[in-house]
Length: 492
Image (cartoon, rainbow, N blue to C red; front, top):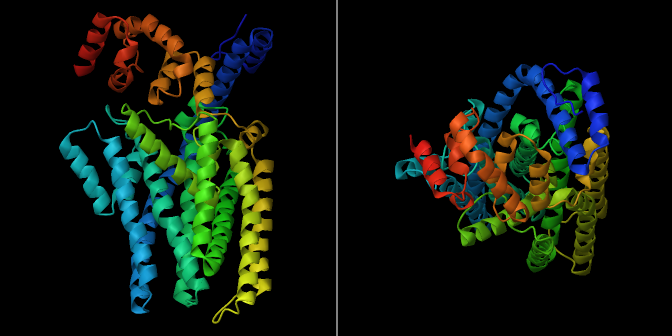
Protein backbone atom coordinates (compact mmCIF):
# COMPACT_ATOMS: atom_id res chain seq x y z
CA UNK A 1 0.00 0.00 0.00
CA UNK A 2 1.33 3.43 -0.92
CA UNK A 3 1.45 6.02 1.84
CA UNK A 4 0.95 9.58 0.61
CA UNK A 5 2.73 12.32 2.51
CA UNK A 6 0.45 14.46 4.60
CA UNK A 7 0.23 16.21 7.97
CA UNK A 8 -0.53 12.98 9.79
CA UNK A 9 2.15 10.80 8.26
CA UNK A 10 5.17 9.94 10.39
CA UNK A 11 8.67 9.46 8.95
CA UNK A 12 8.33 5.71 9.50
CA UNK A 13 5.12 5.60 7.47
CA UNK A 14 6.77 7.55 4.70
CA UNK A 15 9.71 5.15 4.71
CA UNK A 16 7.36 2.16 4.49
CA UNK A 17 5.57 3.82 1.62
CA UNK A 18 8.91 4.33 -0.07
CA UNK A 19 9.76 0.63 0.27
CA UNK A 20 6.45 -0.36 -1.27
CA UNK A 21 6.91 2.07 -4.12
CA UNK A 22 10.36 0.74 -4.91
CA UNK A 23 8.70 -2.58 -5.69
CA UNK A 24 6.39 -0.89 -8.21
CA UNK A 25 6.97 0.43 -11.69
CA UNK A 26 9.53 3.09 -12.60
CA UNK A 27 6.85 5.80 -12.86
CA UNK A 28 5.53 4.86 -9.40
CA UNK A 29 9.02 5.08 -7.93
CA UNK A 30 9.56 8.48 -9.57
CA UNK A 31 6.22 9.74 -8.26
CA UNK A 32 6.98 8.44 -4.78
CA UNK A 33 10.37 10.13 -4.74
CA UNK A 34 8.84 13.36 -5.93
CA UNK A 35 6.16 13.28 -3.20
CA UNK A 36 8.66 12.58 -0.41
CA UNK A 37 10.97 15.36 -1.56
CA UNK A 38 8.06 17.81 -1.85
CA UNK A 39 6.81 16.85 1.63
CA UNK A 40 10.22 17.33 3.24
CA UNK A 41 10.71 20.58 1.32
CA UNK A 42 7.39 22.02 2.51
CA UNK A 43 8.26 21.28 6.14
CA UNK A 44 11.75 22.80 5.78
CA UNK A 45 10.66 25.95 3.98
CA UNK A 46 7.77 26.62 6.36
CA UNK A 47 10.11 26.61 9.33
CA UNK A 48 12.80 28.67 7.64
CA UNK A 49 10.65 31.20 5.83
CA UNK A 50 10.71 33.86 8.54
CA UNK A 51 14.47 33.54 9.05
CA UNK A 52 15.29 34.39 5.46
CA UNK A 53 12.44 36.78 4.59
CA UNK A 54 14.13 39.97 5.81
CA UNK A 55 17.49 39.00 4.29
CA UNK A 56 15.91 38.16 0.93
CA UNK A 57 14.01 41.46 0.84
CA UNK A 58 17.13 43.47 1.65
CA UNK A 59 19.11 41.53 -0.96
CA UNK A 60 16.50 42.36 -3.62
CA UNK A 61 16.65 46.09 -2.93
CA UNK A 62 20.44 46.07 -2.58
CA UNK A 63 20.88 44.31 -5.91
CA UNK A 64 18.47 46.69 -7.64
CA UNK A 65 20.21 49.71 -6.12
CA UNK A 66 23.61 48.39 -7.14
CA UNK A 67 22.42 48.06 -10.74
CA UNK A 68 21.43 51.73 -10.78
CA UNK A 69 24.72 52.79 -9.15
CA UNK A 70 26.69 50.76 -11.70
CA UNK A 71 24.83 52.52 -14.51
CA UNK A 72 25.73 55.91 -13.03
CA UNK A 73 29.38 54.78 -12.80
CA UNK A 74 29.27 53.96 -16.52
CA UNK A 75 28.16 57.53 -17.24
CA UNK A 76 31.06 58.79 -15.10
CA UNK A 77 33.53 56.67 -17.09
CA UNK A 78 32.09 58.00 -20.36
CA UNK A 79 32.86 61.51 -19.15
CA UNK A 80 36.42 60.52 -18.20
CA UNK A 81 37.02 58.84 -21.57
CA UNK A 82 35.84 61.96 -23.41
CA UNK A 83 38.01 64.27 -21.30
CA UNK A 84 41.06 62.11 -22.03
CA UNK A 85 40.34 62.03 -25.76
CA UNK A 86 39.43 58.33 -25.88
CA UNK A 87 36.23 58.73 -27.85
CA UNK A 88 36.22 55.10 -28.96
CA UNK A 89 35.90 53.79 -25.40
CA UNK A 90 33.24 56.43 -24.67
CA UNK A 91 31.19 55.45 -27.72
CA UNK A 92 31.46 51.75 -26.87
CA UNK A 93 30.28 52.37 -23.30
CA UNK A 94 27.34 54.48 -24.50
CA UNK A 95 26.44 51.69 -26.94
CA UNK A 96 26.30 49.13 -24.10
CA UNK A 97 24.01 51.39 -22.05
CA UNK A 98 21.63 51.98 -24.96
CA UNK A 99 21.63 48.27 -25.84
CA UNK A 100 20.75 47.44 -22.24
CA UNK A 101 17.81 49.84 -22.25
CA UNK A 102 16.57 48.51 -25.59
CA UNK A 103 16.90 44.92 -24.35
CA UNK A 104 14.91 45.73 -21.22
CA UNK A 105 12.21 47.35 -23.35
CA UNK A 106 11.97 44.20 -25.47
CA UNK A 107 11.49 42.09 -22.32
CA UNK A 108 8.83 44.51 -21.08
CA UNK A 109 7.08 44.45 -24.49
CA UNK A 110 6.95 40.64 -24.57
CA UNK A 111 5.89 40.37 -20.93
CA UNK A 112 3.03 42.87 -21.37
CA UNK A 113 2.06 42.17 -24.99
CA UNK A 114 -1.50 41.23 -23.98
CA UNK A 115 -1.91 44.13 -21.54
CA UNK A 116 -3.60 47.46 -22.16
CA UNK A 117 -1.60 50.18 -23.93
CA UNK A 118 -1.38 52.33 -20.81
CA UNK A 119 0.15 49.42 -18.88
CA UNK A 120 2.72 48.85 -21.63
CA UNK A 121 3.56 52.57 -21.73
CA UNK A 122 3.93 52.73 -17.95
CA UNK A 123 6.33 49.77 -17.91
CA UNK A 124 8.35 51.31 -20.74
CA UNK A 125 8.66 54.57 -18.80
CA UNK A 126 10.07 52.67 -15.82
CA UNK A 127 12.89 51.47 -18.11
CA UNK A 128 13.57 54.92 -19.60
CA UNK A 129 13.66 56.54 -16.15
CA UNK A 130 16.16 53.88 -14.95
CA UNK A 131 13.88 52.78 -12.09
CA UNK A 132 12.81 49.41 -13.52
CA UNK A 133 15.11 47.36 -11.21
CA UNK A 134 13.68 49.12 -8.14
CA UNK A 135 10.07 48.67 -9.28
CA UNK A 136 10.62 44.97 -9.97
CA UNK A 137 12.38 44.50 -6.62
CA UNK A 138 9.36 46.01 -4.84
CA UNK A 139 6.96 43.73 -6.72
CA UNK A 140 8.95 40.62 -5.84
CA UNK A 141 9.45 41.65 -2.20
CA UNK A 142 5.73 42.42 -1.78
CA UNK A 143 4.74 39.04 -3.24
CA UNK A 144 2.97 40.30 -6.35
CA UNK A 145 1.35 37.49 -8.33
CA UNK A 146 1.56 36.89 -12.06
CA UNK A 147 -1.11 38.86 -13.88
CA UNK A 148 -3.37 37.13 -16.43
CA UNK A 149 -1.92 37.66 -19.90
CA UNK A 150 1.67 38.11 -18.73
CA UNK A 151 4.28 35.62 -19.90
CA UNK A 152 6.24 35.05 -16.68
CA UNK A 153 6.01 35.78 -12.96
CA UNK A 154 7.22 39.15 -11.55
CA UNK A 155 10.18 37.28 -10.05
CA UNK A 156 11.20 35.84 -13.42
CA UNK A 157 10.72 39.23 -15.09
CA UNK A 158 13.03 40.77 -12.49
CA UNK A 159 15.61 38.10 -13.21
CA UNK A 160 15.39 38.56 -16.98
CA UNK A 161 15.77 42.33 -16.67
CA UNK A 162 18.96 41.87 -14.64
CA UNK A 163 20.21 39.16 -17.00
CA UNK A 164 19.76 41.57 -19.92
CA UNK A 165 21.66 44.20 -17.96
CA UNK A 166 24.41 41.68 -17.23
CA UNK A 167 24.68 40.57 -20.87
CA UNK A 168 24.46 43.97 -22.58
CA UNK A 169 26.02 46.35 -20.07
CA UNK A 170 27.92 44.87 -17.13
CA UNK A 171 30.00 42.28 -18.99
CA UNK A 172 30.79 44.43 -22.08
CA UNK A 173 31.49 47.40 -19.80
CA UNK A 174 33.95 45.34 -17.77
CA UNK A 175 35.76 44.19 -20.92
CA UNK A 176 35.91 47.77 -22.26
CA UNK A 177 37.40 49.05 -19.01
CA UNK A 178 39.93 46.19 -18.99
CA UNK A 179 40.92 47.11 -22.55
CA UNK A 180 41.38 50.74 -21.51
CA UNK A 181 43.66 49.74 -18.62
CA UNK A 182 45.70 47.36 -20.77
CA UNK A 183 45.92 50.17 -23.32
CA UNK A 184 47.60 52.44 -20.79
CA UNK A 185 44.81 54.06 -18.78
CA UNK A 186 45.95 52.76 -15.41
CA UNK A 187 44.69 55.60 -13.22
CA UNK A 188 43.32 54.89 -9.77
CA UNK A 189 39.83 55.89 -10.93
CA UNK A 190 39.97 53.43 -13.84
CA UNK A 191 41.15 50.56 -11.63
CA UNK A 192 38.51 51.34 -9.00
CA UNK A 193 35.80 51.50 -11.67
CA UNK A 194 36.91 48.15 -13.13
CA UNK A 195 36.86 46.55 -9.69
CA UNK A 196 33.39 47.95 -9.07
CA UNK A 197 32.16 46.58 -12.40
CA UNK A 198 33.54 43.10 -11.66
CA UNK A 199 31.96 43.00 -8.21
CA UNK A 200 28.62 44.30 -9.50
CA UNK A 201 28.46 41.83 -12.39
CA UNK A 202 29.48 38.94 -10.14
CA UNK A 203 26.87 39.90 -7.56
CA UNK A 204 24.10 40.08 -10.17
CA UNK A 205 25.12 36.72 -11.62
CA UNK A 206 25.33 35.05 -8.21
CA UNK A 207 22.09 36.61 -6.94
CA UNK A 208 20.13 35.30 -9.94
CA UNK A 209 21.29 31.74 -9.22
CA UNK A 210 20.72 32.05 -5.47
CA UNK A 211 17.26 33.63 -5.77
CA UNK A 212 16.07 30.93 -8.15
CA UNK A 213 17.44 28.21 -5.88
CA UNK A 214 15.79 29.45 -2.66
CA UNK A 215 12.49 30.35 -4.33
CA UNK A 216 9.76 28.20 -2.76
CA UNK A 217 7.85 27.66 -6.01
CA UNK A 218 11.01 26.63 -7.87
CA UNK A 219 11.83 24.07 -5.19
CA UNK A 220 8.31 22.71 -5.18
CA UNK A 221 8.10 22.47 -8.99
CA UNK A 222 11.65 21.16 -9.57
CA UNK A 223 12.97 19.55 -6.36
CA UNK A 224 15.47 17.45 -8.30
CA UNK A 225 17.26 20.61 -9.54
CA UNK A 226 16.64 23.38 -7.02
CA UNK A 227 17.91 22.85 -3.50
CA UNK A 228 21.59 23.63 -3.96
CA UNK A 229 21.63 25.78 -0.83
CA UNK A 230 20.96 23.69 2.32
CA UNK A 231 18.74 26.22 4.13
CA UNK A 232 18.75 24.13 7.30
CA UNK A 233 22.43 25.09 7.74
CA UNK A 234 23.05 28.85 7.82
CA UNK A 235 26.82 28.40 7.77
CA UNK A 236 26.77 26.27 4.61
CA UNK A 237 24.24 28.57 2.95
CA UNK A 238 26.32 31.70 3.57
CA UNK A 239 29.50 29.89 2.53
CA UNK A 240 27.91 28.70 -0.73
CA UNK A 241 26.58 32.18 -1.51
CA UNK A 242 30.09 33.57 -1.06
CA UNK A 243 31.64 30.81 -3.19
CA UNK A 244 29.10 31.29 -5.99
CA UNK A 245 29.94 34.99 -6.12
CA UNK A 246 33.69 34.28 -5.90
CA UNK A 247 33.42 31.88 -8.84
CA UNK A 248 31.72 34.60 -10.89
CA UNK A 249 34.37 37.17 -9.93
CA UNK A 250 37.27 34.86 -10.85
CA UNK A 251 35.73 33.91 -14.18
CA UNK A 252 34.88 37.49 -15.13
CA UNK A 253 38.21 38.98 -14.04
CA UNK A 254 40.32 36.39 -15.88
CA UNK A 255 38.14 36.36 -19.02
CA UNK A 256 37.97 40.17 -19.27
CA UNK A 257 41.75 40.48 -18.77
CA UNK A 258 42.41 37.77 -21.38
CA UNK A 259 40.09 39.47 -23.90
CA UNK A 260 41.86 42.78 -23.32
CA UNK A 261 45.26 41.14 -23.91
CA UNK A 262 44.00 39.47 -27.10
CA UNK A 263 42.68 42.82 -28.34
CA UNK A 264 46.20 44.27 -28.21
CA UNK A 265 47.28 41.80 -30.89
CA UNK A 266 44.12 41.83 -33.00
CA UNK A 267 40.51 42.74 -32.39
CA UNK A 268 39.63 40.44 -35.32
CA UNK A 269 41.05 37.40 -33.50
CA UNK A 270 39.03 38.30 -30.40
CA UNK A 271 35.77 38.75 -32.32
CA UNK A 272 36.41 35.56 -34.31
CA UNK A 273 36.98 33.55 -31.12
CA UNK A 274 33.87 34.89 -29.39
CA UNK A 275 31.78 34.39 -32.52
CA UNK A 276 33.00 30.82 -33.04
CA UNK A 277 32.35 29.99 -29.38
CA UNK A 278 28.78 31.28 -29.59
CA UNK A 279 28.21 29.49 -32.91
CA UNK A 280 29.35 26.20 -31.37
CA UNK A 281 26.90 26.68 -28.49
CA UNK A 282 24.00 27.32 -30.88
CA UNK A 283 24.91 24.27 -32.97
CA UNK A 284 25.12 22.23 -29.76
CA UNK A 285 21.56 23.21 -28.79
CA UNK A 286 20.24 22.58 -32.30
CA UNK A 287 21.91 19.15 -32.39
CA UNK A 288 20.13 18.24 -29.15
CA UNK A 289 16.84 19.52 -30.63
CA UNK A 290 16.71 21.86 -27.68
CA UNK A 291 17.09 25.26 -29.33
CA UNK A 292 13.64 26.74 -28.57
CA UNK A 293 13.40 28.48 -25.21
CA UNK A 294 10.83 27.57 -22.57
CA UNK A 295 8.85 30.84 -22.44
CA UNK A 296 5.44 30.28 -24.12
CA UNK A 297 5.16 32.59 -27.14
CA UNK A 298 2.46 31.79 -29.70
CA UNK A 299 4.12 33.49 -32.67
CA UNK A 300 6.70 31.02 -34.00
CA UNK A 301 8.95 33.67 -35.57
CA UNK A 302 8.98 35.78 -32.39
CA UNK A 303 9.65 32.65 -30.33
CA UNK A 304 12.56 31.71 -32.62
CA UNK A 305 14.13 35.19 -32.42
CA UNK A 306 13.64 35.30 -28.67
CA UNK A 307 15.20 31.84 -28.30
CA UNK A 308 18.23 32.86 -30.38
CA UNK A 309 18.79 36.02 -28.33
CA UNK A 310 18.41 34.11 -25.08
CA UNK A 311 20.81 31.36 -26.13
CA UNK A 312 23.44 33.92 -27.12
CA UNK A 313 22.90 35.96 -23.96
CA UNK A 314 23.12 32.98 -21.61
CA UNK A 315 26.21 31.72 -23.43
CA UNK A 316 27.99 35.04 -22.88
CA UNK A 317 26.86 35.23 -19.25
CA UNK A 318 28.02 31.64 -18.64
CA UNK A 319 31.37 32.23 -20.33
CA UNK A 320 32.14 35.40 -18.38
CA UNK A 321 30.55 34.77 -14.97
CA UNK A 322 30.01 31.02 -14.63
CA UNK A 323 26.37 31.54 -13.62
CA UNK A 324 25.12 28.40 -11.87
CA UNK A 325 21.60 28.87 -13.22
CA UNK A 326 23.07 27.93 -16.64
CA UNK A 327 23.13 24.33 -15.32
CA UNK A 328 19.37 24.16 -15.71
CA UNK A 329 18.11 21.99 -18.59
CA UNK A 330 16.20 25.07 -19.79
CA UNK A 331 19.58 26.71 -20.38
CA UNK A 332 22.74 24.73 -21.30
CA UNK A 333 22.71 21.90 -18.78
CA UNK A 334 25.19 20.85 -16.12
CA UNK A 335 27.61 19.08 -18.44
CA UNK A 336 28.07 22.09 -20.69
CA UNK A 337 28.32 24.37 -17.64
CA UNK A 338 31.16 22.37 -16.10
CA UNK A 339 32.97 22.09 -19.43
CA UNK A 340 32.83 25.88 -19.83
CA UNK A 341 34.05 26.68 -16.33
CA UNK A 342 36.94 24.19 -16.57
CA UNK A 343 38.10 25.25 -20.06
CA UNK A 344 37.97 29.01 -19.42
CA UNK A 345 41.35 29.09 -17.59
CA UNK A 346 42.97 27.25 -20.53
CA UNK A 347 41.62 29.80 -23.02
CA UNK A 348 42.75 32.70 -20.82
CA UNK A 349 46.27 31.29 -20.46
CA UNK A 350 46.43 30.83 -24.24
CA UNK A 351 45.49 34.47 -24.85
CA UNK A 352 48.05 35.55 -22.27
CA UNK A 353 50.74 33.53 -24.04
CA UNK A 354 49.81 35.05 -27.42
CA UNK A 355 49.98 38.54 -25.93
CA UNK A 356 53.49 38.02 -24.53
CA UNK A 357 54.72 36.56 -27.83
CA UNK A 358 53.19 39.45 -29.78
CA UNK A 359 54.64 42.28 -27.67
CA UNK A 360 58.07 40.62 -27.79
CA UNK A 361 58.09 39.94 -31.54
CA UNK A 362 56.57 43.28 -32.55
CA UNK A 363 58.47 45.29 -29.93
CA UNK A 364 55.27 47.09 -28.90
CA UNK A 365 55.95 50.54 -27.50
CA UNK A 366 54.26 51.87 -24.38
CA UNK A 367 52.95 50.11 -21.34
CA UNK A 368 53.12 46.32 -21.48
CA UNK A 369 52.64 43.62 -18.87
CA UNK A 370 55.43 41.29 -17.83
CA UNK A 371 55.16 37.54 -18.17
CA UNK A 372 55.19 37.24 -14.37
CA UNK A 373 52.17 39.52 -14.09
CA UNK A 374 50.24 37.89 -16.94
CA UNK A 375 50.79 34.29 -15.88
CA UNK A 376 50.54 35.17 -12.20
CA UNK A 377 47.21 36.95 -12.56
CA UNK A 378 45.57 34.48 -14.95
CA UNK A 379 47.13 31.42 -13.33
CA UNK A 380 46.19 32.59 -9.85
CA UNK A 381 42.61 33.20 -10.93
CA UNK A 382 42.50 29.78 -12.60
CA UNK A 383 43.65 27.97 -9.45
CA UNK A 384 41.22 29.95 -7.29
CA UNK A 385 38.41 29.26 -9.75
CA UNK A 386 38.97 25.48 -9.72
CA UNK A 387 39.27 25.41 -5.91
CA UNK A 388 36.05 27.42 -5.64
CA UNK A 389 34.15 25.05 -7.93
CA UNK A 390 35.48 22.03 -6.01
CA UNK A 391 34.42 23.64 -2.72
CA UNK A 392 30.91 24.24 -4.07
CA UNK A 393 30.64 20.58 -5.07
CA UNK A 394 31.75 19.52 -1.59
CA UNK A 395 29.22 21.72 0.22
CA UNK A 396 26.09 21.12 -1.87
CA UNK A 397 23.77 18.21 -1.00
CA UNK A 398 24.94 14.96 -2.61
CA UNK A 399 21.78 14.61 -4.71
CA UNK A 400 22.51 18.00 -6.32
CA UNK A 401 25.96 17.09 -7.67
CA UNK A 402 24.51 15.31 -10.68
CA UNK A 403 23.13 18.66 -11.88
CA UNK A 404 26.73 19.67 -12.65
CA UNK A 405 27.20 16.80 -15.10
CA UNK A 406 23.72 16.25 -16.54
CA UNK A 407 23.04 16.67 -20.26
CA UNK A 408 19.26 16.57 -19.87
CA UNK A 409 17.40 18.82 -22.30
CA UNK A 410 14.58 21.22 -21.55
CA UNK A 411 12.08 19.00 -23.36
CA UNK A 412 12.90 15.85 -21.39
CA UNK A 413 12.96 17.88 -18.17
CA UNK A 414 9.42 19.16 -18.78
CA UNK A 415 8.08 15.76 -19.86
CA UNK A 416 9.68 13.96 -16.90
CA UNK A 417 8.27 16.55 -14.51
CA UNK A 418 4.77 16.08 -15.94
CA UNK A 419 5.01 12.32 -15.42
CA UNK A 420 6.53 12.63 -11.93
CA UNK A 421 3.90 14.99 -10.52
CA UNK A 422 0.57 13.64 -9.33
CA UNK A 423 -1.60 16.62 -8.41
CA UNK A 424 -3.50 18.52 -11.08
CA UNK A 425 -2.16 21.79 -9.71
CA UNK A 426 1.42 20.69 -10.34
CA UNK A 427 0.67 19.25 -13.77
CA UNK A 428 -0.99 22.53 -14.80
CA UNK A 429 2.43 24.22 -14.72
CA UNK A 430 3.20 22.62 -18.09
CA UNK A 431 1.13 25.36 -19.76
CA UNK A 432 3.73 27.85 -18.55
CA UNK A 433 6.25 26.26 -20.93
CA UNK A 434 6.69 26.54 -24.68
CA UNK A 435 4.38 23.98 -26.33
CA UNK A 436 7.22 22.93 -28.65
CA UNK A 437 9.06 21.46 -25.67
CA UNK A 438 6.19 19.30 -24.43
CA UNK A 439 5.14 18.11 -27.88
CA UNK A 440 6.24 14.50 -27.04
CA UNK A 441 3.50 14.27 -24.38
CA UNK A 442 0.87 16.49 -25.99
CA UNK A 443 -1.70 13.68 -26.30
CA UNK A 444 -1.23 12.73 -22.66
CA UNK A 445 -1.72 16.36 -21.69
CA UNK A 446 -4.82 16.61 -23.87
CA UNK A 447 -6.36 13.49 -22.28
CA UNK A 448 -5.59 14.64 -18.74
CA UNK A 449 -6.92 18.16 -19.39
CA UNK A 450 -10.21 17.10 -20.98
CA UNK A 451 -10.82 14.49 -18.27
CA UNK A 452 -10.49 17.07 -15.50
CA UNK A 453 -11.63 20.38 -16.94
CA UNK A 454 -15.36 20.07 -16.18
CA UNK A 455 -14.60 18.76 -12.70
CA UNK A 456 -12.36 21.73 -11.91
CA UNK A 457 -14.92 24.23 -13.19
CA UNK A 458 -17.62 22.65 -11.02
CA UNK A 459 -15.55 22.20 -7.86
CA UNK A 460 -13.54 25.44 -8.30
CA UNK A 461 -10.42 24.47 -6.30
CA UNK A 462 -8.31 27.37 -5.01
CA UNK A 463 -5.53 26.74 -7.51
CA UNK A 464 -7.89 26.91 -10.52
CA UNK A 465 -7.97 30.71 -10.47
CA UNK A 466 -8.30 33.30 -13.24
CA UNK A 467 -4.65 33.10 -14.23
CA UNK A 468 -4.66 29.28 -14.36
CA UNK A 469 -7.80 29.23 -16.51
CA UNK A 470 -6.30 31.78 -18.90
CA UNK A 471 -3.19 29.60 -19.33
CA UNK A 472 -5.20 26.68 -20.78
CA UNK A 473 -4.72 26.65 -24.59
CA UNK A 474 -7.96 26.69 -26.62
CA UNK A 475 -6.65 24.10 -29.08
CA UNK A 476 -6.33 21.46 -26.35
CA UNK A 477 -9.99 21.62 -25.30
CA UNK A 478 -11.91 19.11 -27.44
CA UNK A 479 -15.47 20.12 -26.53
CA UNK A 480 -16.57 23.57 -27.75
CA UNK A 481 -19.20 23.96 -25.02
CA UNK A 482 -16.60 23.25 -22.35
CA UNK A 483 -14.31 25.85 -23.89
CA UNK A 484 -17.11 28.45 -23.89
CA UNK A 485 -17.83 27.75 -20.22
CA UNK A 486 -14.13 28.05 -19.42
CA UNK A 487 -13.77 31.44 -21.12
CA UNK A 488 -17.07 32.66 -19.67
CA UNK A 489 -15.89 31.80 -16.16
CA UNK A 490 -12.59 33.51 -16.92
CA UNK A 491 -14.30 36.79 -17.89
CA UNK A 492 -16.53 36.90 -14.79
